[in-house]
Amino acid sequence: MSQNPEAVVRAFFAELGKGGALISAVQRYMADDCRWDNSGLPSADCKQAILAMMQGFIDSYQLHALVVDVLALGVGGDVVLTERVDHMDTADGTRLLSFPLAGTLTVRDGLIVRWSDYFDPRPLLPAG
Image 1: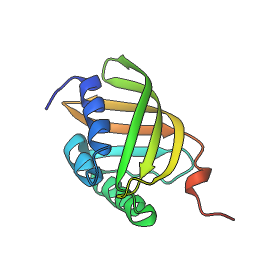
Image 2: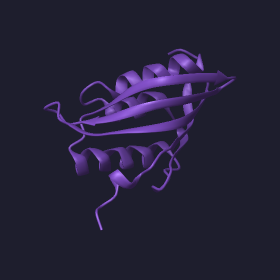
Image 3: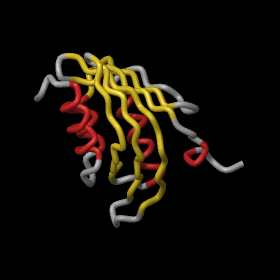
Image 4: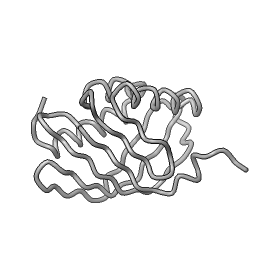
């Protein structure tokens, strides 16, 4: 696996977009002590918690792929900054939701150790 932060992040995003590969992407690209923060949603403090959160999205939305369109990307050392649009797709190709966001991913030794996304979470929250 590449040690280059940009290559790691791009490969991670590409795997998230492959049908049915959400769990394997987390298993392959996340460090055991990785932290995942999503504005307005609970944080996950380790790979096992990230896997549980990802499984929750899969179960709740019948999520099959998270297709990531990178609009802009910048790298400073081990930190990768992204501006992107993430698309939540089901197995039959139905696009459930698309949302713009900015994200920061930190890569060390070829693994993501921090993943923070900043976006409006209201479309993901229950109505009411």
